[in-house]
Image (cartoon, rainbow, N blue to C red; front, side, top):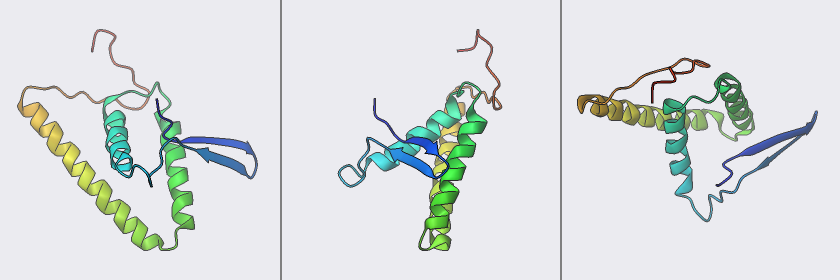
Length: 117
């Protein structure tokens, strides 16, 4: 098991981050984590805490953008990369459905029927 990101708040102004991933030594892990996270977000229920988790991911992204040297360029890059990934995921779902696969979507906090695998 690898720690993708660990964030702890110890006090008002004491937030600390940790990860087991070194993007300098293993740059391929970043795109791997992106696709794995997107797949997990699209296919698994997070136990009902997805709204809180997504809120914290977005809070970290906003803080990162606020500290960015060139916000506009970073926003364009994030927009482009997320659009390419979203198109790829949509294409994969279409192909999956064409081959007879079923896709079920559950809203935040909605648990599937226990008989559904």
